[in-house]
Image (cartoon, rainbow, N blue to C red; front, side, top):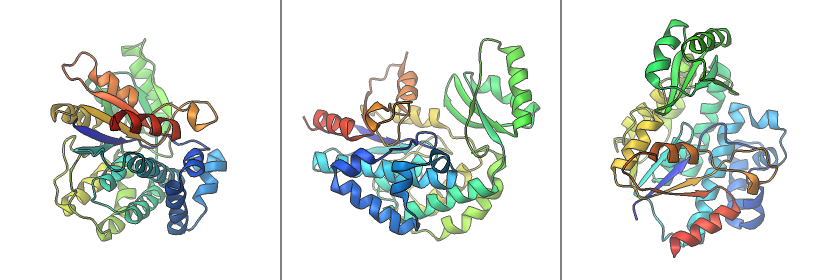
Length: 322
C-alpha cells in the first residue's frame, strides 16, 4: 500500500466536533487540554458547546480544525500501533499545516501557534468574500478579472472558487449567469476572500511569526497548495510557500493529480465534517467528494477512507490493519 494522509480546511468545522474523541480516547483528551494551555482560552468548550458564530470566526476555526484533525491522527496511530504509515501528506489550505505535522516538519505546539496567528491575521486584515462555481478555471478567470475578483481555489476541473468584494462578486455572478445559465455559483461563508490579493496585508502581518517558527525538513513528501506539487524539503522554502499560499489560489486539483501520479493506492482523511446532523456520527468527510470526482474517468485506482470521528477511526484502522 502507498498511503496518503489528507486534512480538510476551513468550512468543515461544527459545534460538537471532537466530543466523541474526548469521550472515547484519553489520547485525544490530552491533546485538547494541551491546546487549551497553548491558546490561552477554552477551545474544548468552544468546540463542544459553541456558540456556532464564535466557532466560525477564522481566528477560532483554524485552531479548532487543526486540533481536531491531529487528534484524529493521534487516535489512528494508537489504534494501528503506528503500523499504518503514509508516504505522502497533503491538506487543503489550513490542512496543509496538519500535513506538515504528520510529516514531522512541525510539532503540534508550533503548528497550533502558527494557525492561531494565521487565523487572527486573516480575520483582522483580510477583506472580501468567496464564490464557488461549478465551472472550469478557464471559464471563470476571465470573467473574474473583469470584475476585480481573483481565483481563490482550483479544486476540480469543474469546481473553481473566486474571491472579491461582495458587490464585485454579485456582478461576477450575473456575468457568469449570462454565459452559463445552468451553472449556479454558491456563496461561501468566510470572513474574507482567502487565497487572493485581498489577503496580502494579512500575509505581511503573519510573516514575522512564520519566519520565527521552528521547522524541520519533512520525513516524507508533503504537497504544497501553492505549487500543486511536492514541497521542497528545505524549511526556509516551505515557509515561503506557506506565505504565498495566503494570497494565491489553492491548487488542490494539482495536489490530487500529483498524488495519483505518485502511485498512491489509499487516501485517509482526518478531521472535520460536513452535514446538518447534530452528532459527529452524522457528519460526512469534507474532501471525499473532490477526491472521488477527480478519480472518475481516470486510469488511477485509489481507495478512500475516512477517519473523522470515533466510528470511522475504528473502522478504517481495523480495515487497514487487516
